[in-house]
Image 1 (cartoon, rainbow, N blue to C red):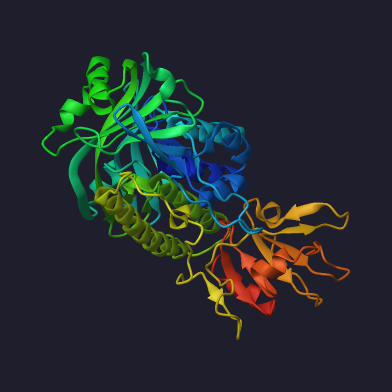
Image 2: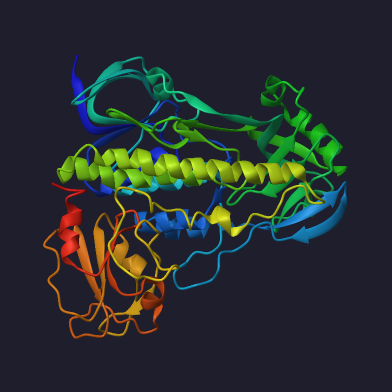
Length: 508
């Protein structure tokens, strides 16, 4: 049997697998991305996109398309039966500052987010092998041999250096590895989620300017909201713990019409059900994300309750963290141990985010007059970082307590180039390279590494950018800051010679 080859085999074309594939494609890393379904995710489930994820989209060349199709999270409209009760802001914006260019979470149905990711991958020359299922794999010290079955029944063998399992919460790969996946069920109550079309005398009342919520509805919380770029609405309904999941998965338009009438008291008819699913809120996480040549990412590594909009965002950023590290191993001669930092960094982040999502869930359950509580800035993921990582080196002395540190997210700042045109730090960071920000007027010799782009910021004649408004000084202070390809400060130092020593961590 012919054996195909790829440097990385990615299983699962959700946001996690697609972000990883995009990052590998722009780095020229041959890979395969396989998906057992015949198309991408069909439903709306993961609609919330946090500010930190918008920054990831900026780097990957996705932001213009995403901003054009998504929208800000609408205000919440509370109802009691057919009567409007109260309107409030459901989410809190980040503090406006030059370092945070995208302060507001946005919404787009998951199916459309996946489509935009697929389109970007194809622009870079990649593609998804749909209707292709991983049926078996075996790893050895040099790689992984996988068996794929295509829709027509043909079987293919693929030899890859690395296998990344991004195949969801019921991950076939994770189960085959026998990896413990532990957590807690936050509630025994099932929740129905569906994408539907609505008609009826009261249809105009369910406007697209609000997220409509019935926190005291008979039978449990009920919500409706219009989906971006679609004539459909997302319907969510909580049920008593005695309701069997099979009853929820098999609902018809007639069933949902009766449900809407009971929960809202409004004259509405469900004319079409485009997608339906159910879930029970729970948390779970694999004890490790790296297992030799096999790496777990996204829901295959951790599952979140939907409260707070953390799951998709955390999962997607697994792929973003992993892409540059795989490239360093495959192209820069970095030791395989570099991938242990993926495990260490992302398990710590996932555990923290799981705790946050669980606390938001409990606050929602505790209720109040609105049922669902306002989402604060802690859900934006802008303060997540890797200060404790082996890849974070802060070699400065006597810096202020609140100073930017190695491991922190590298903030944006707007400076001026020689012509007086504005240039953002995010413009400098964009791409698959490290960036050395030199916030000093001293002359120095830039590192002779093609993987590092040096940008001098100051008032000297050799400066690339001028800090005309003080944004760089305010966000960074002074010194040398080596920014990782995924937008976190790797090294903060007063001596540029430290950069060469740091490079030994991530390249031969």
